[in-house]
Every structure is written in structure tokens, then in C-alpha cells.
Image (cartoon, rainbow, N blue to C red; front, side, top):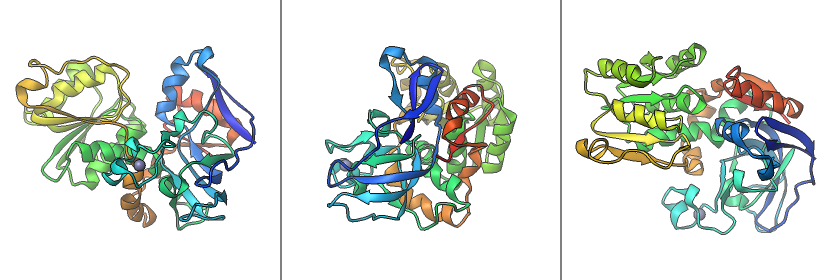
Length: 347
Ligand SMILES: [Zn+2]
């Protein structure tokens, strides 16, 4: 079968790899009908060392179950399913707590940690299929597929930012980042009733989509100037909740400048730093809390599914390009160059 592999920074290739097959009785084999490139994939695309490659790529997919192990009960051959970006049993202590991203089952993992599988491919072996996969009540060619595919990661991740930040109808929110996750954070803050949603981003096509998703204001300035602009929009006080969807240290510093006393910085952009201020001059002095982490997407899918199926919300609008497997390398480059916001793959 064919799959995409990253050999190093800027070097993605589509090649023949051994067919994915069932290994354990709890596995399912899924033929992928829709996948995509994630903003997270752009971190290794910028920095992967050749000695750490080649790496199978892709952690978001929808597909048709081709085969199941003998112990799988919730999905069967022919079912259309969506997978979250991590594998979990959905039954352990942490899964029951709503944190499948911390599942303690020995086979639990993030797809990016599965060295022999990847979603930017024709097929995939899904460990812990009963816990991981969610059956979809539509056909594989449904017009809803782009929106349903966002449940794999970006929509659930934006939603996790908003939920972790405690967004509600009394909340003034600022979202840092106009990538797919930032825009999903806007949609999620709107869904949770936020009073004000300031979107910080510099790409007008993206911030326009943010306005469509519910942003009330857009700030294109960054750094001190951006902080000042948000403070002006919030009566000088700052935002109750800052949803940080970038992951860089400057984005964290920007969040610190924007959050109001007693507020929350909720981070879902994978941090590319280990050290940042948390002391008296930053978090402590004004009772500011830090929240967020890898999205427990599996825990949100069923709750978000009805509004996606009814078309009430259309998170799939973040896809602005579509390709087959052959076009995946170009898709990466277009996203790195910011020519594309998010690329949908039809293997
Ligand atoms: Zn678990």
C-alpha cells in the first residue's frame, strides 16, 4: 500500500510500504477515505533530522472498516469511522475521567508515536478499535466529511482550549493564532457563549473565516502592540481567557500580556519551549492560571457530533485545499508557505 513518509525537514515522499494488517484481536483495519495535514506536522517538516526519519505521517482520518480482530464489538466491516489523534481503550481510570490522551493501556499512544502506521496513507491498523473509533452515520462521500474530519483533532483541540479555559457566557476571550486550531478555538468559544472573542492573526483570509466562526474583533498586531490593542478592546483590563493556539514562547508572552487578573491562559499549541515565566512578575501576582494540554479528542467527539451532522456548525471550512496521496508533499509545502490553511487528503 502507499503511504507518506517524512525523511527529514522539507522532505516528504509517498512510497510503497508493507500493507497494514490486523495484529491483535482488539485491532481494526481501516481503509482511509479522508485524511489531512496538521499544523503539528509542520514542526517536524521544519526541523526533522534525517537520522530521525523516515517517519510515517498523519494522525487524522476517516475510513471504512475492512476487517476486525476477534474481540472488536463496536465497529464492523463496512462501517465508516472517525479516529481521534490518539489511541485509547476508553475504559481506564483516565479515559473514564474524560482524559483519553492520558490512557494507561499499554497499547494507548498518539498516532504520531506509532512508527509503523500513519493516517496519510491508504490504510491503517487501529489498536484498541472499540475504544478509539467512533462510527459515523453517513456515507464516505458525504458533503459532511470535511467537518467530520475536524473531529479527529483540530475541532476537538480548539474545543479543549475553550473548555479547559472555562469559557462561558460571562467570558471575554482572546484567541492567539489564526491557524486551523485557532479558528476552531474561535468556533468553540462561540459555541460556549463567550461574550467577546478577539482573534489575533495576520492573514486576512483566515481572520475573515474567524469572523464567520464568531470572532467579534480581529487584532493583526503582535507583541507589545498586539497586547495594547487587546487591552483597548477589553476596557484596559485584558481577557478572562486566552486561548493560545500557536505554541511558541512569544505566543506565551503575548498571552501573559493579554490575560486579566484572575484569568486563565489555556494552551493547546504544542509548546516549543520548556521554560517561561510563572512567578510573581507573571502568573502568581494576579492569580493567573495556566491550563490546557494535548486534546483528549475522543472524549469530545460524541458531544460535538450532532451539531456537525445537522450542519449547525461547519468546522470543515478550515480546509481550503484538497489532494490525493501524490499531492501530499506539495500540500506540506503549501501549508508551510501559508498558501494553504489546511489540506484535505483523499487517498
Ligand atoms: Zn484508557
